[in-house]
Amino acid sequence: MTSIRHRLLAWLLSALLSAGLAATAMTYFQAKEDVGELFDYELQQIAASMRHQQIPHPPPAENGFGDEEDNEAGDFVVQVWDQHGALVYTSHPDVALPRFTGQGLSTPSWHGQGWRVYVAPARTRTVQVAQPMSARREMAAKVALRILIPILILIPVLGIVIWISVGRGLRPLTAISAALATRNPGAMEPLPERGLPGEVKPLVRALNDLLSRLGRAMETQRRFIADAAHELRTPLTAVQLQLQLLARADSAAERESALSDLTSGVQRAIHLVQQLLMMARIEPDISREAFRPVALDDVVNTVAAEYAPLALDKKIDLGVVRSEPAMVRGDAENLRVLVGNLVDNGIRYTPSGGSVDLSVYASDSEAVLEVEDTGPGIPPEERSRVFDRFYRALGSGVQGSGLGLAIVKGIVERHGGSLSLASGKTGRGLKLTVRLKLA
Image 1 (cartoon, rainbow, N blue to C red):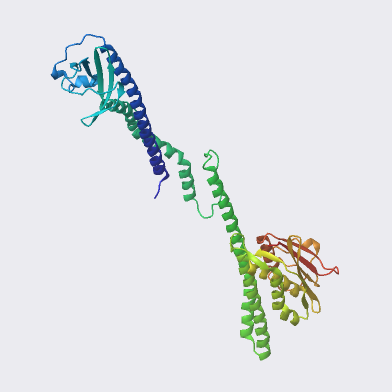
Image 2 (cartoon, rainbow, N blue to C red; image 1 turned 90 degrees about the vertical axis):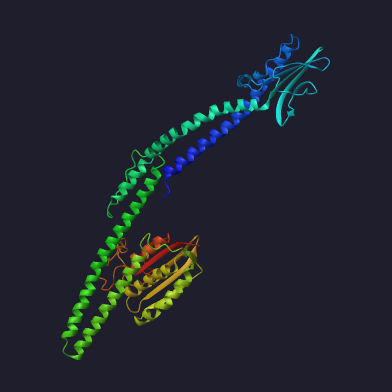
């Protein structure tokens, strides 16, 4: 498992080590340049002091170039030639450097080793002061190491500090994790945001939003299950009683009547179950299929054709009085259910000889669906309640589940539309208008 603490520790220590190495390299090259300038100046000063001084006796060979103290002093090799070209003095008899041509500063190579040489010719002598380039590199390396060594020493210390600091910084996440782990499925209270770092607050807010939505979904589910159990009890009890009547029937006429009642009861129970399942499908955050372009006029014409036999059986004039192209984005099956429920409601509540008219058209940026019937209508004071689940207007005398318009409302809300009720053109009946955004 990847750990934020391990990852931060690795990245920070790697960055520190890289910065230390980069600083060491820059220091080395800068020190090499500075040391070179300083030693060049010293070469010139030594040569200037030897141009007019009395030639000293050369030192013994055992104190020559290979001596450690001379190396620490700079490893300068001083040579003096007279005007005839004879070597009259050398500070390191064991180092037989040749006389380099030219004058001033140069960097020749001798026996595979680089030398920094300064030649100062005079009237009676020529002074040559040389120094191996390795001495300069060693000096620059010592300066650079003085920077790298403290960084290397500090890395373990900083690693401990970073480990402790990151652990303290991640404590709020640990506390949130522990708080969530100890909760039961029914505990949907929001997590506290007080005292949390600014980087953690967005996460906690997102979790609280999720808990809020989960709480609403669970409450909707509990309410739905309770309502479904309550509503199913009545038709199932009726079916049980009708079965008992069928079992006790003595004559063929009684059995036929009981069987007819039983069939009607079963059909009502099936219709209720279908409505309940449809209601469950359109609950918020449950159905998440991608919306697609749907021709609402085609849906209306198809549904009208499907319900035509039912309307004909009840002697109701069902027809599409206005059908214009209206393309919307949505779930085609849900839209078919929406239109079907509106038509079914109109047929149920319209008496024999009445009519149910459907219209679909585009108006500005909206698709408009209208369903108008010549039934008893709904009193204005009850229109705000007919979209509630299981609500049925009193005195209608029509069997139903009370879910049809609730399903319609859920589908319209899911599609971001609006729904309104009004009286029919003649003052009687009901006109229901659905508005959806055009694709």
